[in-house]
Image (cartoon, rainbow, N blue to C red; front, side, top):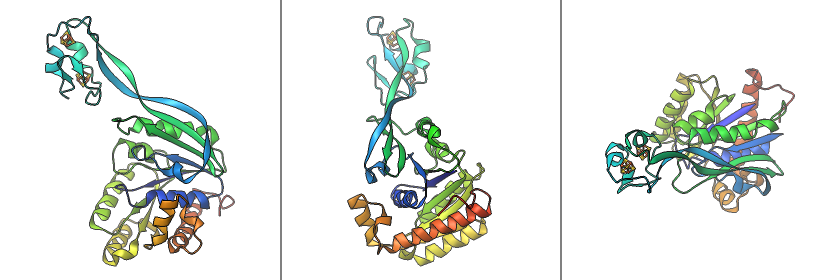
Length: 293
Ligand code: SF4
Ligand code: SF4
């Protein structure tokens, strides 16, 4: 059972929701697919039980001893990645065009490490995560690798919760593929509604049950109502409306899930959302009613 938590942009409270749901779920595995800004693991103390290297793509490399400085490679490179016979690895897209035009066969494409991957064991299950190298881009392939890394821990009773990449790029597609539920976290703003529409368009290509959570819903009740109307029109479940709560900031600053704050109104709303999500998952046959709460 896989739940992917998504948002159109960073800073919508997605990680707060993921950390809280992870506390509420019985047996959980977490995958931090927000590879450009991974911070889920900060909420947990744990031990790395597996580390690995991720090679996300190839970069051109010029063998100076063969190069006759003809400039053909610089001319053909559409990414302006070659200057004075030197490749800029941050600009190189690994397309290989330069290798084709080099009269000296002086250019080769070499695998470049773009991230370290970790499986971290915590008292609240395994977290799969990555630390990307400086200048590397978050890629769908890296997200797919992080998801693959936890496969061996998944069984009938586990819920895998994915902290998805924001936006609608490759990394998001890899976060949503083969998931049972996509929980879209949005805020009551015009851009929040636009982002919701964009992710929804994307998720329509996948067989996943979409649910919507409106974070800080009470900062703009008019926009909240517009989001609810849109959700109704699209037959989406608005499973949660989380009120603005100063305790969330305290939760982020102290790196404790919001569920640790007993008097938090956001905590209460997320608990109610989790019950609603479970009810829908049971009703839709995604989850057996023996495995929850
Ligand atoms: S591989 Fe492509 S992007 Fe990289 S330097 Fe060669 S032509 Fe440019
Ligand atoms: S095309 Fe080959 S020989 Fe010409 S400048 Fe580039 S690397 Fe050197």
